[in-house]
Image (cartoon, rainbow, N blue to C red; front, side, top):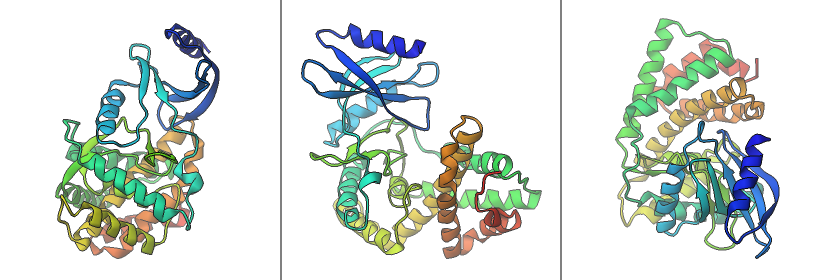
Length: 327
């Protein structure tokens, strides 16, 4: 309540505006919270970001917002901010995420819009941090630490550890050989908002980096919250390549391999993150999304001989049998 009182005092301090009717808008997998408020002068709603400064740094969000809006992608305008307190007042992009509207009839149009926006962002020239080997490996370590060890109570033997290390090296090499571009890092159906103008509205981009060109494609098409048939994904990848062709020349086979291996890296990381969100942060709802995330890994293991050591580890440790059932 102390934090909310701080927030209300800050809103009251904003010149010539009266913001009332503070209502929870959403929370995410971080320590940030979002509220919706109404401006009594123009009767419009706005979003307030509450990011406790001891837990979250708002400066990257501010800087990346400028970058994204500069390439005509629909990110929220920042109306007011107090970085010392961790408060930002933002345009309201609405309360309808892609996830609520996606179905087999709407998917092609919605994903076409998302791809077009993604290509604009991938052309951003910036000095954002690199999604380098250390960062990729640190993420992969979450799979063993939080998913295998903590969630399933599994301890790898030395042979299995060595096999996993070889697979991680394969995944990192594939990521590093790709063109390196602006990466949103969570470009999925919960972070894309339905918008009547300049669809989609894009949120939750404060962790953006410079990294592999397929990373956000994986987030979008192998979304941990909604699954699509392989044929749809292939069609959307083809559309992406067609739109990209003016600046990048990548053949479909190469892109598909990069995409698939990038997916394994991302989904191993997410298995660890979802487990950590439960055990460390008390956010048990993310356990419901473990089975689909694991399925993506298993499906890709079936397609690539180089991933058989990973499949063997999953078989030997009964991960497949448990299929992500909470312990």
